[in-house]
Structure formats: structure tokens, C-alpha cells
Image (cartoon, rainbow, N blue to C red):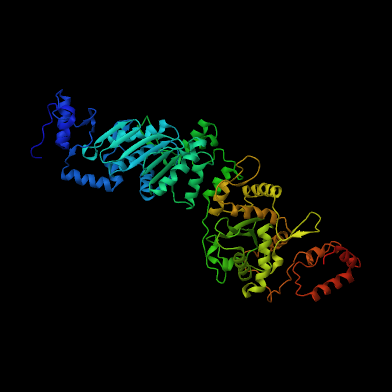
Amino acid sequence: MKNDFNPVKEERDGVKARRVVWSTKTIEAAIKGLEDGRKLVANPFYENNSKILKGDLVFQRTKEEIEEWKKCAADIHYFSNTYCKLMTPEGIKKVKMRGYQEGYLDHLMKYRLSIYLAARQCGKTTTSSIFLLWYILFNVDKNALVIADVFSHAKDIMEKTKAIFVELPYFLRPGVYKWNESQIVLDNGCKLIAQATTPTAGIGYTLHCVLWDEVAHTAPNIKDKLYNFLLPTIQAGKARLMLTSTQGGLDLFYRIYKAAEQHMNEFGAYKTDWDEIPEWNPEKRCWEKRDEAWHQMQVANYGSEEAFNTQFGTNFDINANTLINTKILRKRQREAITFVNKDLFGVTGSEHFFWKPDFEPMDDLRNSFITVTADLAEGVGLDYTVFLFNRMIPGKKDECVGMFRCNTMNLDKASIALMELDIKYLHPDQHCISLEYNTYGELFIMYLMENRNKYPSCANFDESNIVKYYNDNMTKFTMGVKLNTATKSIGCKMFKDEFERDVLVNRCVDFLFEAENFSDSNGNGTYKASFGHDDIMMAEIQMVHAKQSRAYKYLRSEFESRLELGLVGTPSPQPQQAQPVRPMAYPGQIDMQKLQQYSDGQYFDPTKVFTNMNDIYAAMNQRYQQQPNYQQNYQQSGMW
């Protein structure tokens, strides 16, 4: 470069330093002069630290340096792999990013709001520091904030960011106005600030990028308040928010992460498990992959699998009082299946039905013995209406093969969807439908009755397939199971037993997500969703109640008979003619099942169809001739 400035000889107050044009070459000459014990005409260094340039220096880059600066600004991977250095067991070396660290940088570039669940010792501090440094180097007038569960952790991130900064070539380093343990202020207008977590952290700053480290371990009395304080500011300014943490309990971090996994919020979820992290071997002086032998050694060191997971896991098992045993739940999750939408011609809302990939509803439903369970909601965008389709399989098991799930369709439309699927695709003699008999259950039944007469597509719906739940002495029934605190608790315990023994089989990823959140948060034996929804869970729990019903037991008997004959999996016999419509059993009207109990223990043929009152009278007369006490019992029953 022509007429390079000679920095040697001293100039007062750094004024001369700001007037001259600096370059990499002249700065290196200044360093050499200082090393030789000579004074400088102009001093470019912040507080005489030769690693840091003063603010407002005029710095002239070469063409090659300009190109390198542009590459670093455009590609964070190029920046990190080419120029970032840190202290290692072998001295200061270039940072060698691992695959999951490269992936996390890509993740940060993609998502403005990100959440990172990290196993311990994964190097998230290094990765976060590289991103923060890149952000303040190659932007203008931006404020980045670092907060952590304790201030010392925020300082660690700040110190690592500084350590990388001072090893960069001078042409990448802006000048510095302020450089202390809690703040870096650069002459490009960017700041990096480290603060402790308080309910008002970051107040007074316009924030453009926020890293909150160890969210799960932030004090409970601060965590939610700080988040509710930060998020409106972040969203209003379209700023970046990076939440990172090792696992904790079922807290704010857990709720945000799980919602992100299900694409229920704006956050992008990222995770690093323990087996992705290499282990340093001091004898061989190299990094080695963690394998199962390492895992078992650590389990022995910590004393149990649970203790190991507390330190290295990413399963949120700490203090997680879930209904399902976490070890079994993790095993089921490894076998999880995403249910998919399939054609269901002629069915309202068919886009809300999802099935096992290997299950073809238009063919397989009619050839299966199906129990439908329903959890009902208003359909106003909050809770979901759910129908689960469980088919009987060998081993006296039931497997969930499909579901309807929607929170925008009202109960009237949902009833039509169920009726149309029932008529078109379910075998009339090989299924039953269990409802929850609450406020929505009664309304749903009313819609079933009304829509059968209102819509031709629903005209052949047979309500006798709805499971009737009787009282203890079999004198009264409801067309659905009544759930209260006691019956729900019993149902949860029964379901836990059957699910953990794999008697009730459900590998649907959406169900398993709800099962993971279904916990006794208060420790009082009451289970509910700790986050999100539990509609699929409650519909599946209803199966244990349905299995106690006469309708289910009759279907199970038929299924086992066909299984013995080797007929399961073959097309089921179809009715010779269209099945006549049974009269709807309104409360207070005749119900043949209730009437049958008064006939000295003998029941009518459960497949018997009564199309009108004359058929009913004929059946009664026939029974009267066979059993003289029948009429007296019938008259005493008050069934009319």
C-alpha cells in the first residue's frame, strides 16, 4: 500500500490514531514497535490492549480482505470454520464445529424464534457465542442481550464471545467503545449486553436479539414474569429470541418446546441428545463417540438410569409425574407413527380423519371389529372433538388405527361426519360407539337423532350400536359413560395398566405427545394435560370403560370366534339386505335391552331388529307363551 503510515513515536490522547488511515499492515507494525519497547506516534488500541482496536478508527481493507469480509457476512459457517478460534486442550485452535452445532447455526438462521433442548456438554455456549459474535460484527446499530439462570452463566457466554473476538484478524474486528464483563459496545453501533435474569431484564434497551440460556433452571418466581415481559417487546420489534436449556421439569421451557415440536407456536425446536456428543479421551488425546458401553458406565457411575437421565437426558423426566411410566413411554415414542389423511368418499369433514399408514379405511374398516370412542367439544377453535377407531386384534388386544380430530367443526357437523362414516364404511354388526355422557354428550345424541331424519346420508344410522352404560343393578342406563373425579381416576388407573402391558395399543405420534403431557401436576391423583390438550388421551382412556360394556363383550366374543375359525383378516359376511332402522331409544321410552332383563335372565337375540311396534308386540307375545311370568315382570318394570 502506498505511503503507509509509520505509527512509531507517541501522540497524545489517541487523537492522531483517529486521524490516520490504518490497515492490517500498519497495525502489525504498531504491535511490533510495542514489542520492541518503542513508543507510538498514534495508538490504535483500546486501553493499550493490542487485541482490541479503538472505536472510530479509519481502517482500510485490501481487496482480498473485503472479499473475505463479505464471505463471512454472508455465510456464518464460513466465518466460524475459517476464523473462529478458542482455547482447547491443545492450545488455541480453530473451532471445529460438530454436525449438530452446524445444524444449530442453520436452525438459528432459519428461525427468528428458536428453542434449543440440549444435553449437557454439547457446547451450546460456544455455538451461541459464535452466533452472537457474528450478529454484532456484521450488523449495524443492533442490540443483543444475553441472560441466564444466574449472572455468572451470562458472563461465561460474554467471555467466550470476547475470546473468539480477540483471535479474529483485524479486518473483521470493528473498533470498540466499551469492553467490560457485562458489555461490549462496537463502533458499528452494535452492543452485546450480559445481565442476570430479573423480571425486567433488558429494560431500557431496544432489543434486536436475545439469548436466554438455561431457561428451565431460572428461578420459578422470575421465569414466567420475565418471559411475559420480554415476548411482547420481541414480537413488536420482530427481534430474535433464542431460548436454550438443558432439561428441567414440566415448566415454561417444556411447554414452549413441546408446542414448538407440534408446530403449535412460532418457535423452531432443536435438540441434541447425549449420544451425538463426543467424549475427550485424555490418553489418546482425541474425541471419541459415546456408545452404549459409555452409557452403561455412566449409569453405573450415577447409580441409576434415572440419575443418568437427570444429568444427560433430554426427556423432561425430572419431577414429571406422568400417568404412563416414562421408560415405557420413551419406548413407545421410538415406535411412533404419524397417522395420515386418506380418501373417505361421501364423508363430511374427511380431511379431519387420519389413519395408520398401512390401514385402508375404505376397505379395512368393514372387515374389522371396531370400537369407536369419542371425546366431544364445542368446535370453536379451543378443545378438539376426537373420535378414535380401535380395532380388535389377536391376544385380546385393541389397536388404534384411526382418528377424527378437529376443533373448528361444531357438534352438529361432527355428528354427521360420524354417522356417514358409520353407514358407509363400518360393518353394521361389527362395531360399537362409546360416547362421554356430559353436556356435550347429550347434545351430540340429540344431533344424531335429528340428523337421521334431516339428511338422507344419515337416514340409515343405527343408534343401537351406541354403547349403553348401565347402573349397578341394571335398571337404568345412559347412552354414554358419565365421568366424574372418581370414575376418571379409576379409568386412568385401568388405562395405565392396559397401555403399559400393550393391551391397548396406540403408536400415533399425536396421542403419544398428549400422553407425555398427561400428568398429576399437583400430586393429588388428578391427571390432566400439563400443557396443551388431552382430547385424544381422554378418548383412549374411554376404551377401558367401553370394554366393560355388554356391547363390547358381545363383539369380542364374535371376534374370538372368527379368530378360532381362521376368519380374521378375511372379508366379513355382509347382511343379506339393507338393515332396517331401529327406533331411537329416547329417555323414558321403551328400550328392549332393559326390558329383556325382566324375562328371567333370558335375553332377546341381540341381533334382532324391531322396525315397528307390531314386531315388538309379536316378540312379547311369543315370550309370554314361553314364560308365564313374563307379562307380570314386564308390567312391573315400568319400561314405558
